[in-house]
Image 1 (cartoon, helix red, strand yellow):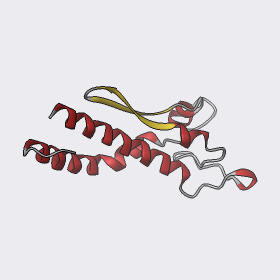
Image 2: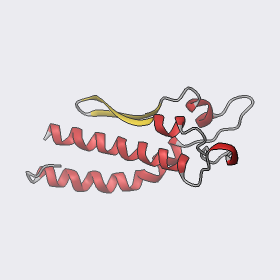
Image 3: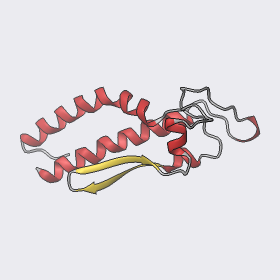
Image 4: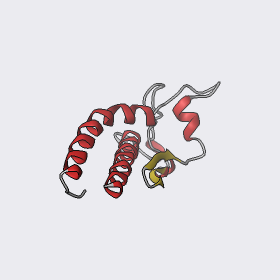
Length: 117
């Protein structure tokens, strides 16, 4: 059962990472036609370094994280003195939270009944 719970935890982190990357890439135009996102909206992909840096990672048997490793990820997420925030991780978490709750409940019910994920 512990192993199945670990799979669920990683799946939820991966859902969050996937949604964050999608927020960055949806509607984005790379290269010379790139348009900067408006403050408060997720950043638009240009070089794709940011969206490709978003990932899920197991950190323990029942622990996982989703993170963005691009050098400027935190500056975009939270803003700086000169640049207003362009969050992508927090909106992604908000978007998947409801679905994650339903998925968690269904998965745990299945595991309790002897099933596997």
